[in-house]
Length: 152
Image (tube, rainbow, N blue to C red; front, side, top):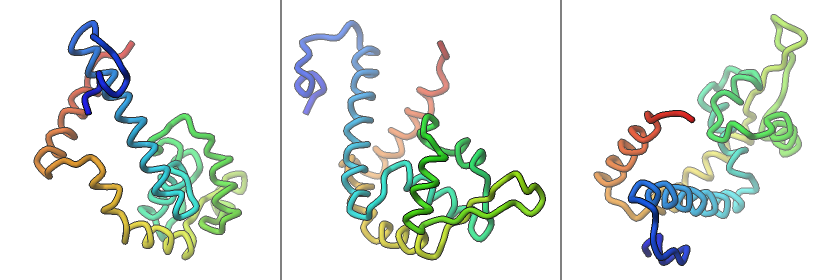
């Protein structure tokens, strides 16, 4: 469905305005689809992002600061998210041997199992865009190019 129909907009100021509105709308739509999918596994999109970061470092741990710098949603309250993942036994926090004031974060076996379960069903969310492989690659390239634009 066209963005005009989705949001009941008669006209846009320009094609660039339309593209920005469409991108924001589609981003929120995609985020909602991911949240619905991940809720089946008892985690949020931000928690999933943290688990993926930690899996990439496994068996090593990383600091909360490093996790925050690699998050897709940089506005996330990482401390709160980490505490919730500890309660779910998906991660553990350990004192850093070189700096007792610092804490390293590690993914647990249970955390790895949750990611394995998600990966078995991952096609359900990966294919939500209804694009061919070539179209998905083109979209990704265009989004990379769009982020290379001017800052405010």
